[in-house]
Amino acid sequence: MINFTPYDGDSFNLYKDAVDRKRNVADKLKLQNIEEKVKNSYDNYQAAFIDKNVHSLSKDDSYSLEEKNLLKELYSSNQKVVRDLRTWIDNHNKRTYLRKCPYCTLSRANTTEHILPKEDYPEYAIDALNLLPCCSECNSAKGERVRDENGNPLIINFYYNKLPETQYLYVRLLEDEKGYIDFEYYLDNPNHQVEESMFQLIQSHFDKLGLIEKYEEAAIADYVEIENSLKSSASESGVKKCLEDLRSNTLEDGKEYGSNHWKVILKLALADSEWYAKYLEKQIKKETL
Image (cartoon, rainbow, N blue to C red; front, side, top):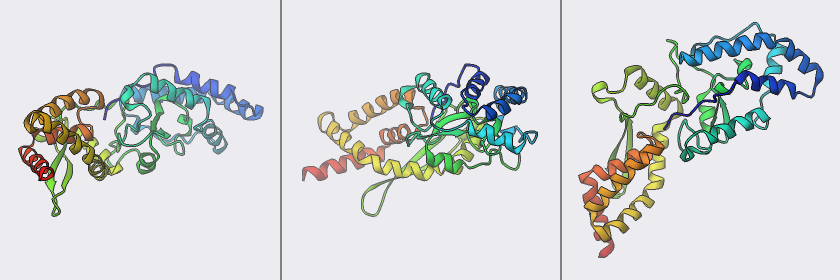
């Protein structure tokens, strides 16, 4: 996981441009009549964004049902404002996350997520700071709730919740009854190196999206390729050197994918495990018999 760079232009200008492109003259006029009210809403969002508490914004019941519907209709995945924003995000963030879902880091970002859901906050339906590419599975799992009963956010905001470099994601390496390697991911905050409220937000994010189970499934799916590559390398340089190289290369990968990316954590666990070194040697010997 990594943080994303938020849109640095004027979000309200994007809104006005979208209204100007409306073909229905009557709908355009109705939206232009509430422009000042929408501008105030955008200013409130901007202030909350700067204070890193967008999740605390309340629903605005001053908009009529008709106005809410008109605001929601400004959004669609094919609308120019959405296409342009996704292009901007692609061009201003790491290519390793090009069209990749930031919420899970596993799937293609095939939808555009509303940080504050447009059904409850239609005034922000095309606010650039309220939109983030993500996968449909995470978009669905996130749901409509944005805060818990204590007012705390449920999901990481990848624009402003600064992700810690300190490790918080771990994986245990196991051998099942059939002799296959297995993986058990978990979150931990030893010595409270990650600020407690941030760690609680990470836990909430992982729980809400079911990431532990997803990472374990992904690790099993990817491991065969990793092991085959390691065995090929170890046959030339030996297991010790092979795992040293794995560690060195993975630390470089972590600079691009994030130090707590599930695959970075997996490879470092393999590289640092004496048990795994013996396991790998055992697998290589099996193939030479």
